[in-house]
Image 1 (tube, rainbow, N blue to C red):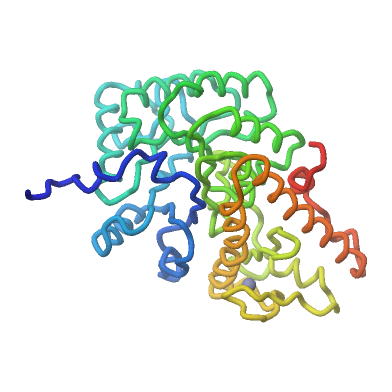
Image 2 (cartoon, helix red, strand yellow):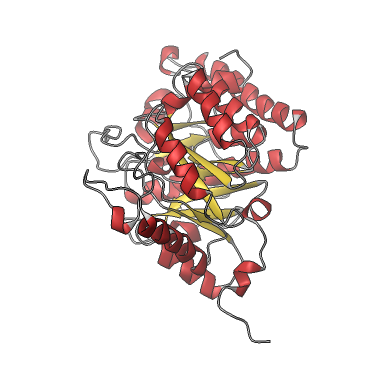
Length: 382
Ligand SMILES: [Zn+2]
């Protein structure tokens, strides 16, 4: 029998089955120097691609090897706020403050945008939800009402939530109550000007959100993805480049660039389990011997070799993935539930001990702070 267009998609099963237990790499589809980051590392479970060329890139992957990799497209629709009238960004209902009612045509266009992702070979589609401001219950209710009309097996509801949702217990309870009976996968991304988990109480609140819901994912995050995974998230995605590790509040400025470069290289320290700017890491160690890394990218070289250049940034990004992959693998091989949670806590606990041990050798021990969220991951109260 001749295969009809889309048959390969219908055969693959619901999103929650295909993506269950996966730790994906969240990356730009291409970078300033023309490289394709998704091709530079292959030991992961799959990818979420972001950027204007994400759709053609997954399309070309799909044509080369249909169904071989798990791949999703980040709609990156977070530069303006969702409203009750316009919770999603579609071409006819686009940008610049003048948002009209989300009407029948827009819903049809939303359906087309989801179908466009699938026909290009996406494992499932993600809705182009706009940024959901703190406590904006009407925007959430409107998004939910519209998404209920879309196929739950293949459409995932993207929820770009401002971190302040995690600070207000009433708002959090509202979210949980509203999302509880939605059959679609809920893909949460957290937004803030800086780290969404830097505020006290947010780690615990995020865990509550994850553990209270079925079919919930945490995307476009950093090691918080492993904490969510350990606490029962369906799947998670960890950013390869810094902007892919959380979403920014609309209108907020990014972190300042290093004084001497327009590139910032961030290095994940394998023992300290934290990301450091390349120059910060060098200043921290001072005259101490640099930390050597035996990941597949570094092969025993020092982590102090990185500078704020495009090529070093690209290599550091690959080192970062090679560093967290074994942690993800360890968690994936551990029974879900209490065993997996305690395996994650132990990893973080050991890293916190490594912080303390290094501090004892530093000329300026105060320069190495253990982040508040990390202490909670390691077992401290929030
Ligand atoms: Zn390395």
